[in-house]
Length: 72
Image 1: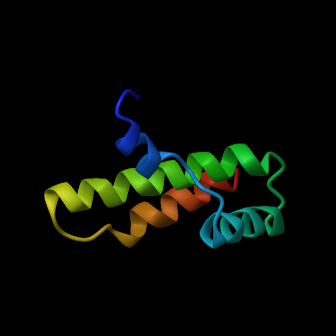
Image 2: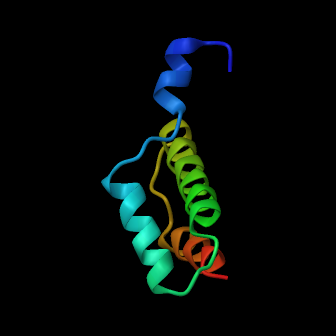
């Protein structure tokens, strides 16, 4: 990413949300916590971005599907 300001905003950060996802995945027996955390949060970010651009809400079914996939 060439734009330093944009990179600063978009680069994943360690935070309470990321920690919560890690704990959730670990509690459900996921073995590769860091990869699954990154993938799940990236997908959720994409859904949120899509809704910001297109309007509307993120369907609950979409979130449930992402979480179910992350638990595999």
